[in-house]
Length: 78
Image 1 (tube, rainbow, N blue to C red):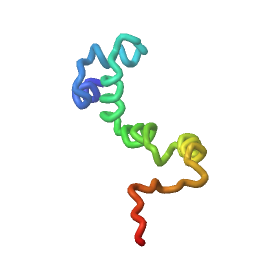
Image 2: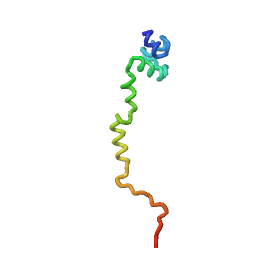
Image 3: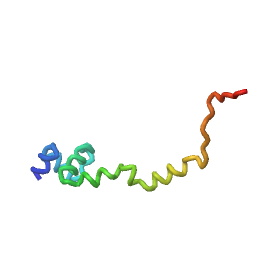
Image 4: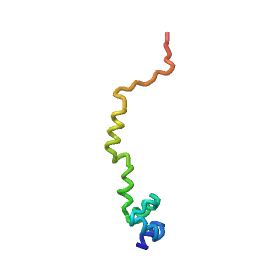
């Protein structure tokens, strides 16, 4: 576990707290351990817009069905 702590850039004591589920450990330390263990790639996809089907569906519902462009300063020729 010393290697994981070293790769994560945290102390062995902090790693022990993470293993025990101590709520006082900063979320950044959890992320450092996840990346040190090589699990960061799938973890990064949690916030990926492309992977959020529900969010995409909600966005599509908010888009107006028909949109018109604004007319700015129409010029009439005689």
